[in-house]
Length: 462
Image (spheres, rainbow, N blue to C red):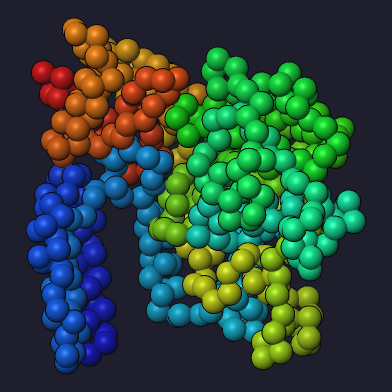
């Protein structure tokens, strides 16, 4: 079989998978032992024909795939893949460009340059901000906080890239206490230490307590972490007030906008991010609301010099843009901690061109409308309590038990819905109570998907 035949056959398998999303159960149908038995063959001594490898892979993985790319998946905050983004991702793999340097792939380097500028415009971020394309918000946080660490310590006469952290002034990280776990891991990876991660408190709805922030801000090197879209409720911190307080103390403000910063693309929702442009760094995911394939994250930093100083590197065997006639070119490895990597800006470029500014706004607004329909529809079922109504695309409900053990009943209903296969919701804990989290970020979600999901919850309750 030729490479051309193999790729066409593989594309047919992929098309069949996507075409069947509406009919197939969302939950895997095989357990761990079955998947290990199917996939856990002995290491082959001799290779197989390419076509046989692909046919086996399609067959053996099918019962263990989660239907997370479909329109009835409302767990975590997981988008699907837009057709143009999916196709562009295939091209990215076929081209196999190393997106580390302009010299190692000039076309994809320029695609990243253009796409970064588009994203800043869509998200309402400062034009002078630098940017990088990462695997997701986790590495974007690491990059942004590395830039913050550099600038805060450089301002106190400490070269952290040369001298390390031993003996350096401690960098504090202030949060509401409801920050995403990826912030904590970034603090650990950067050596800042979770002992220096301090919760200033939040109001009853989960927004950072501005009075508590004002009380805890000092002249010590400090990062203030705010949220554009809290992971459970989608709530937004008061950016203008918090940024003003931080600026007065010389603190760095970092915004976790993994999905919520996309509200800036919607005229109806833009008020939620008022003042966010006053921060120093921002992170966003593309594989959430923009619906590009995994893995796709973005980091933006108001201070390009600090950004570049924190993560850039040089090696004698590389061809750096500044050393060639292409002196104005942009080398991607100057802006993320990665070296060799795929050209992950290409699917983002394709998605933005396919949707346009208006299409992205319609996607965001449509998901918000579907979230309201889901929460309202489930709230109308017997024994349901709404814990958080949607601000954007997140909502929380729980299921009440006659014996008073609402947590156990909530987890049991979630498990029954997942096992039923018609819809998929996840669980979480909010203000000490177990809840079912409703998250809508998929371009495939429509009214029919919402109706089927409400019916699936009703069936699980009865």
